[in-house]
Length: 58
Image (cartoon, rainbow, N blue to C red; front, top):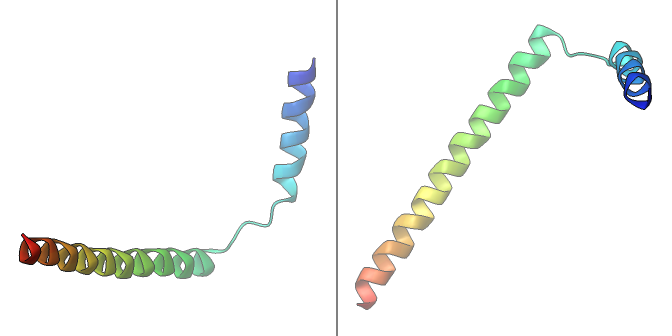
């Protein structure tokens, strides 16, 4: 019975959720993709510098 009450309360909470519109969803998705690209470039550059430094030291 506890499981049934849990799912019933989940259903009530999901009806109260304010879902984003398509414009907000596109903006947020673009932001996530853009930041992901920037981080991948940054970490790629750091990796390259570290590899170059280790080759230089050896």
